[in-house]
Image (cartoon, one colour):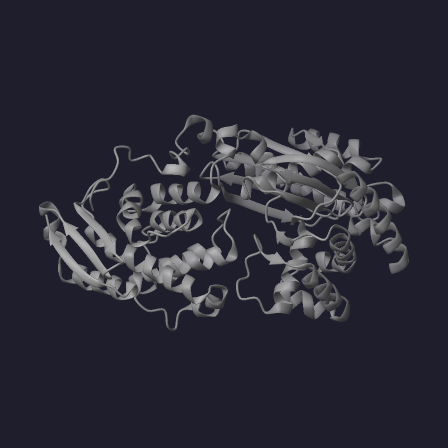
Length: 511
C-alpha cells in the first residue's frame, strides 16, 4: 500500500489515540459500588480510556428498599445481604488493584431512618465511605452515563430504581434540567389498586413535565426495570439481536409490551426472557410508569442504555478532551493495539481501501475505520471459526456509540474479511436489519479488507494503491516494485473477488 500523509496518528476527525496519554491511563482501573434500592453492584472498569471494558461486574439483588414505605427503615434481610456484599466487593476491588474505589447510595439509603447507621457500619467493616446522593445528582450522573456512550446526544434520560425515578435533559453533550420523583416500583407496589397508582404516577409526571417543558426527542431508558422490559419486548417481537444497549422501541411498542406483560404468566415470561424473579415482580408496576411516561412526553423514539450512574461516575473523572472522543473508534484502536499482529496497520488498510468507497459519508467512514482496526484482532481464533469470531465480536461486544444496524454492518464486513460467502453463517438471521445496498457495501468492505490484508510488509507502507474508476467500471491496482513480490496467486484471486463485488474489471499497473 502506498503511504499517505506524514503522521501515522492522524485519523482526521477522530484525532490521535489517547489511551497511552497519562491522563487516560490513570482511568484504566476504576471501581464503583452502586448501592441502590433493589440491588448492590460492583463494577471495575478497565481498558480503553474513552470506552472502557467491564473488567469486573457483580450484582446482588438485596432489596434494601423493600418495605421502606411502610417501616421507614431498610429491609433487615436486605441490609445483612448488602453488608455481606459490600465486604466482598471491597476485597475484590483490592485484589484487582483498584486504588480509588467510589461507593454511592441512592433513594433507599437516603430516605431510610437507619441509612446513616448502615453507612457507618459499612465504613467500620470495610473502611469504605458511602456517598449519599440526592435525586437531582442521581439524575445528573445517569445522564452523564448516557453521554459516555452517546457523545453529543440530545433527549430525555429516565433512570428508574426501586424507590425513585429521575428525569434529566441532555443537549449538545451537556446535562440540563433535572427532576426526581418517588415513582420507583417498590414504592408504587405498596398502593392497593392500579387506579391509585395511575393517579400517583400522573401527578408526579405532570409536575415533572411542567418543570422540564416539551421533550420530543429521544427518550433514553436507564435502570434494571427498563432493561427487563426491553428483554420482554425483544421476546414479543422475536427480535434477532439480543443486545440491550442501543435497543430501540416506539411508544406503540411500549403499549403492546405492557399489555403482553399483563396478559402473560410471569414464571413462563421470566424463564423465556432471562429476567430474575425479583425483577419480574417489579415489572408490571414499572410498565405502568413507562406507558404513562411515553404518553406524557411523546418521544421521537426510545433507546435502552446499558450505561447509567456507574458509567456517569467514570465520565465524571474524564478530562474534557477525553469526553469528546468517539467511544467506538477509541475502543477499536485499543483492541488493535492489544491484539492485532501488526498494530497500526488498520490505519494504512483504511487509507488503501478508501478509494473503493468514494461516496461514503462520515457515518460509513467511521464504520470502515472501526472495521479496519478490528480486522485482525481475532487472528488467534481457529481458522475455521475466525469469521464467526469476528462477527460475534462486532455484534455482541461491549462497544459504545453503535446502533444495532451498525453492529450488523460491522459484523458482516468482518465476516467477509475471512469468508467470501455467508450462507450457513449465524449472520443470516440478522441480515433483514440491513437493506440490500447496505449488505452489498458491507460485503465490499469485507472483501476489500480481505484483499488489502495480503499486501502488508509493515504498518507504514507496502507500496500498493487502489483506484476505482467508476466511469469505465475498472478497479486499478498500482504496485510499486517493492510490493510486486507480494502479489501472489491467492492475492490475485482476492483482487478479482473484490472487483467482482464492485461489478468492475480488475486491472494491474506496475510502477
